Length: 176
Image (tube, rainbow, N blue to C red; front, side, top):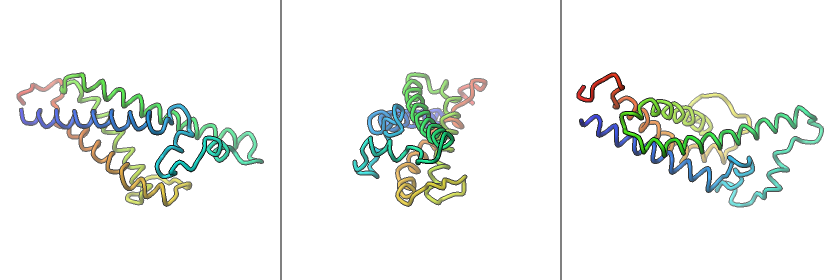
């Protein structure tokens, strides 16, 4: 019974926090699900980047040709896919809160994996762990990654993995 209570708390906090933090963050602040230039709304830029500047700066430089333009298109498409994926998973997390805790176990596994891999990227950018490389990383974004993003993903990782491991699988009885 205590295990299920802890599992329920971790599950509710994890899915609720994910839905609220990422859903409102993506939709209300960035809007990167609609445009890669939504990222200009981040506090690190202090409102100094116009939409027009964003488009200009993200455009392939003169002489880059078709491959340069395609690379930029692919990178900015990936940004929009990420924004839409985070929004979709935030909606999914809100839905999970309507389901019994016992039925959330497999979803907690997926969200736990998402949280750990997102944490790995932010922790790498912050210089905490070796995990890939971003040759375009700046000191400002690395410092930002070291703060709220690493804290957010750490909390979510603990909640989802705790929920996953503490919730009995459907093959186990609730008393075990």
